[in-house]
Image (cartoon, rainbow, N blue to C red; front, side, top):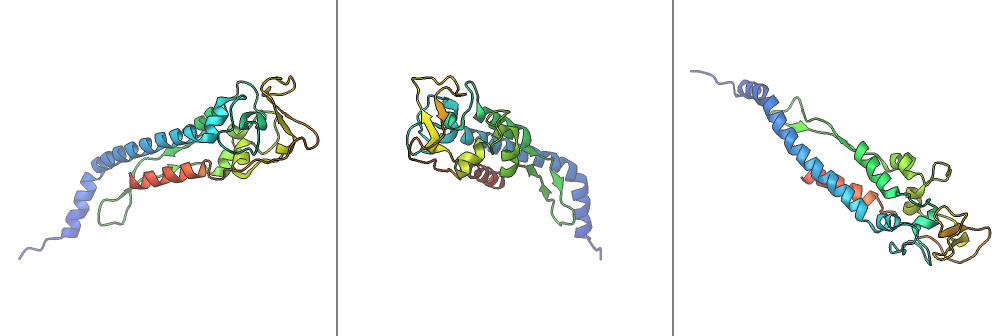
Length: 204
């Protein structure tokens, strides 16, 4: 009576077919990754905070982050022509990477795994994308919109006067309280989009 070693057969099939299956699997995972990454960048760009910053120094505060007048662009003091959201998206586009698919050894079935590198929120806040200007020494705008930014009481906004000493031309920070109010943090900015991105990677 002949004895069939199915374990050995599975091992041989896996060894012979592994490289070809790995290529197919990698292509499938690449497509899943590209779709999720594109969706992530779109979601961030379409966020009300991103839209308000992109609209520039004359924008309305349609993100609802300021209790009274003004907008985030002039409140943070971005210079005319600055495009902070574009810098953020470029940073994410450069730092989010997918590695090649690799077979996991020691399993009966063919199992492949691919790793995606995603910068943490701390990494993003430490990056050049977080800077308001090269000379600005504060913690940056991303942490500001996520956790709140002090100084709203000293902030004045005027789209008509065009302040010469203002980088944005529509906002100034003065000594002393000039108005009552505050900035409301939007802690879900970036974190919700990145969470959705991770979820899409797992679900496909």
